[in-house]
Length: 162
Image (cartoon, rainbow, N blue to C red; front, side):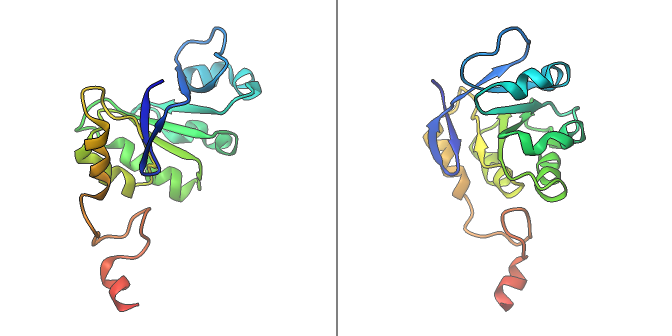
């Protein structure tokens, strides 16, 4: 079982990604948006935890009516330069009030973990060629942030005045 970073610690990844619908595995699952859209009832009937993976060109509005039924939403980062997942994470947390696990997958490594966390991600599937222990340190690269974000609602100057 592979490991991920979740809530600041390294843990076993209990989810299996399902991109084609056949027989759902007897474990927690994350399905592609296509599987979700075509087999939603079967996925919801699955007795384990369930989630949906969105690619950068798949807006969270596609699943907004089902957020309370999902344990995890995985947002894929196919390349370091593609920042749409950051915006989607903020939308999911702020506009759509998603409180479940928000997972970053794809081109995820130490240098972007701090910023992903600020946007609302709480779990990270780090690239296979990167060391998880080293990547974990990325969550604490900075001791404070000037701007408000998902993880801190007030900007630094307001926190200093309080």
